Length: 337
Ligand SMILES: NC(=O)C1=CN([C@@H]2O[C@H](COP(=O)(O)OP(=O)(O)OC[C@H]3O[C@@H](n4cnc5c(N)ncnc54)[C@H](O)[C@@H]3O)[C@@H](O)[C@H]2O)C=CC1
Ligand SMILES: O=C(O)CCC(=O)C(=O)O
Ligand SMILES: [Mg+2]
Image 1 (cartoon, rainbow, N blue to C red):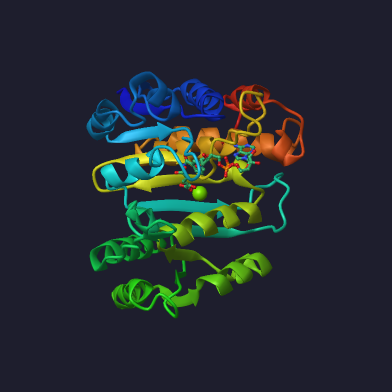
Image 2 (cartoon, helix red, strand yellow):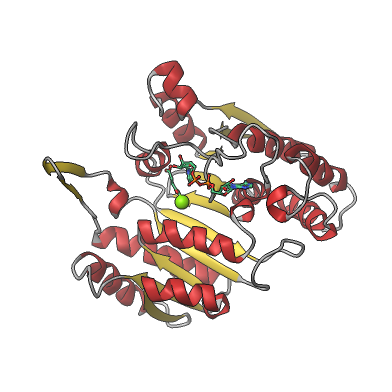
């Protein structure tokens, strides 16, 4: 049976990495009808709209999308399309694992963390206004319902993956009402999961502890901004943004993308590492009950990484994006799964 999957190729390095990831999935024999969807800078220039209604409708209909990164200008321009997609489709859980990979140079070995980021609230609610010239306010919205569903997601994830501990990351000492509610809700949800250890940690100390000894953490749950920052930090622990995947998950749809952005410094140069998007794509394949193909692709990828002969620049190699993808495709029929 053929699956329908929306494909948002993205800005910057997006088209380069989505092209090769799609080629690898096709080469692995998964039957997918890719539905191209417009979004981002290209769509804004063409349609005057960075997130056309048609794109939202298509994702609502297929319930699945693979997405390249989309650019958001700092301090000006349209609202982040990434944030809008998450909000419009109620993709409330951003699942961002950071796991060491053999052959990938990194400051630590055997890191295996999961950042669970609340994806629809916090400072990303987009509620900003000028009070008087020179004074602006950004509203940080935390709700009990939003906190409960992300806490439950974190505990359910921990349970289903056989993980031992969930840590709530917060700043409830300063943000007494908003993070106070988030922490209090996580504390209550934890009581329903006596089989999973639970604790909490204030975000600044958590950042220091992650850098000093990431092995002390397991599953981390937090609101939107902290999750954005600590998931990039977690990427740094395992070799950088070129290797960390993510899934934006809701009850009605799921959008899979890398943790990284459009990498303007290397865009258009055939230099980007497609590993992060490829691992997001294998996460998607598992979600679609195509676990065999996902495992075959991962085995080929891990074999290329471990061999160390065809690595991209971020991993201290000199291979191009397309060389790296070809090396993975060449292994698809030989790897044991
Ligand atoms: N989900 C999304 O679509 C995201 C979009 N963005 C957007 O991306 C744009 C650029 O953001 P930056 O802060 O520069 O972060 P970035 O993640 O694009 O890049 C940070 C650094 O990591 C490197 N890098 C990222 N991905 C890589 C890959 N696959 N292979 C090799 N190196 C890689 C870049 O070359 C750069 O040096 C901004 O407009 C931002 O809003 C940022 C993060 C996520
Ligand atoms: O929306 C953006 O442009 C940035 C989003 C981001 O950094 C993220 O989702 O991790
Ligand atoms: Mg980010």
